[in-house]
Length: 512
Image 1: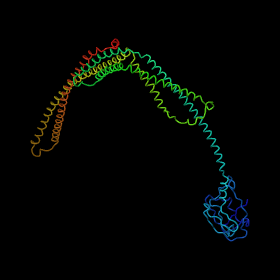
Image 2: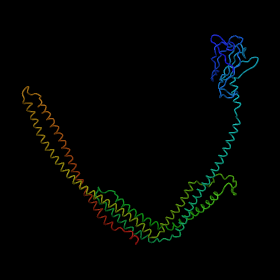
Image 3: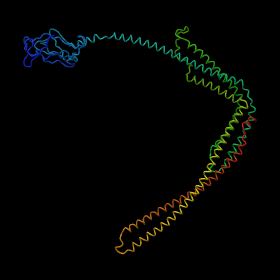
Image 4: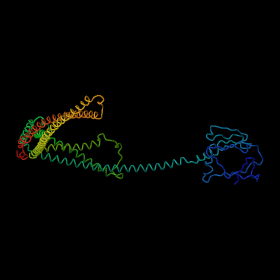
């Protein structure tokens, strides 16, 4: 490897020509960073001197540098710009710049020997661009993409088919469930039609016996109107009595409507049976088709192309409407059957149900009356206790008023004493003796304190008298309320209890 030249700042010397020259400071070559230009300092800028031409220097590259024909780290963006001197490839040329230069800056000039338009860095970048594969990568990417899409499509079709099979299984289970429900409903309505032979004559006698509990309930309501005004409330007992009357009327109305609608109910039962039979037949056919579809596979021998089937039929309904129709069909048939059971039920069943309702309502009314009586008794006892406390409080307040009056009389005597002392000192002491001594100040303070105390006690006396007036008024209210409560107790506990003792029992209804 040739050694680089070293230049002395005082004079130009060469180590090969002048062995005594100082050693070179250029141990390693210096590379330009990207974006920097080479210095225009040219050793050949001076006139030519014989022996100034140096041997060739071998370029050094980093160990990890790419091949020489590819872009290097030492390449500058402005190209290999050389200085101009007395000797060189373009000694007789001139600088030139064109838009084609781009980021490379100044370009070499044209002389009579050759033309150079691009730098070495641009040549290497062009090599990199030429060697970079294009269509090959696209082909590989296309092959990978197509195979991946095909595998994804096949997997998606398998997943879709598995999902459809699962949905078909779920649909078959749902259809089987609803078919069973419809079949049970059909059997129930058929049994109901077969057993619709009710005895309707005894219902009339059951309607007549309802007049007794109705009369008892109305009489109890009328007796409660004799209560005094503070107790004329719509309490639970009143509500239950009104409800009792309403229940009697409703039971009578149900009996009468039942007698009038037996023949109509028979026609309704037959119509409901026909509708449920159609629904049952449709579900059997659908279940058979879905079972057949569930057993079909891509390897089956019964599958064919059927163009135009991937569309919604004109008569197709939504799943929500189908579920609603199934529920409504069963519910309508059940409603008809329930009405038929209510109509064709034997006399004992209807009478027992009505008597049970009356018994339950009677118990609720009696319980409400008992609670009202208990609450009224407790209130009456509390009122009497409150009246006693009120009388005691009135006595205490009156004693307090007497005590305040006695205290005011004592304070009045003290006020007279203070005033007399002040009068004697103000008008009894002659000349300069009538001074403002400590005794005078004390008497003045005593008079003021006595006056304020008297005023305060008079205010307390007025408050006590006002409280006594309120207590007296409260006493009258308590006595009046106690009389009212005792009147209500007489009605609810005595008179109504004797009337309600004649209510018919369920056994009496059954034996009517």
